[in-house]
Image 1 (cartoon, protein in one colour):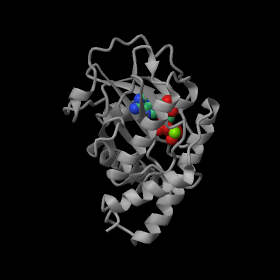
Image 2: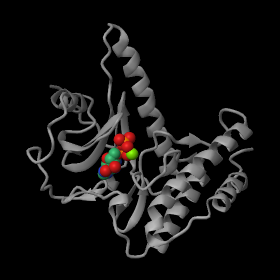
Image 3: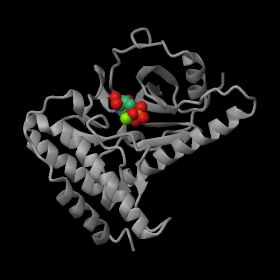
Image 4: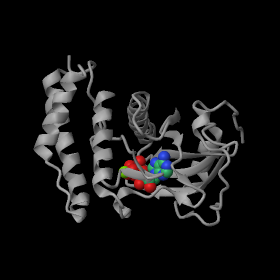
Length: 253
Ligand SMILES: Nc1ncnc2c1ncn2[C@@H]1O[C@H](COP(=O)(O)OP(=O)(O)O)[C@@H](O)[C@H]1O
Ligand SMILES: [Mg+2]
């Protein structure tokens, strides 16, 4: 098998000193195509070692990998098998498009200074990014965490949403499932449904309507989580403020 040795962009963001206690034996190998996915990741040069599966989702899996020792997360959109010949390449292409969209949205957010895992490289239906976690395992999802300072954390999450808008991105699938708690701070992941709100593309008011709906449903999903701390998010007021900030940042003009 051929392994390429291209330098990783943004390498300094990866912590090469992490000692892994997780090894392939401990992590799930239940995924049927595990070996072929590993082969594909290695031959694409996205990683030099795949440690194991972190998450098996509906449309994508996330793997823990290493690039010359440095930890990485790799999100791999699944290619569905179809019965007819010729179905494969079409599906591969649409999943490549999904990965490209998510990768670009993360890149835009990261360039705008938002706390998201630094995207590193994309090859077809997979991309690599900074791994959030320790040698004990990946950072927990907000939904699985009990917060010491819930009000402070909610404010931080709202600040992340605001910064995302400043970067021209509305997340589109925000919830306590897609916020990881790493080193005490919220990190937003999963930009598969993200909406680009800037000069490019469809007419501003279509974007505005779409963006507002996405913001409101994201805030409502977060409200479900924060209710356990008796915290309320004024969804309408918050969405208003955020949509107005779209104008302030000039992203709609
Ligand atoms: N950069 C990362 N570092 C550590 N864990 C991650 C990272 N990205 C994703 N994960 C883990 O993988 C899970 C699924 O990732 P996500 O992007 O939300 O995919 P899905 O589309 O399946 O929801 C997350 O809940 C998280 O536990
Ligand atoms: Mg998710």
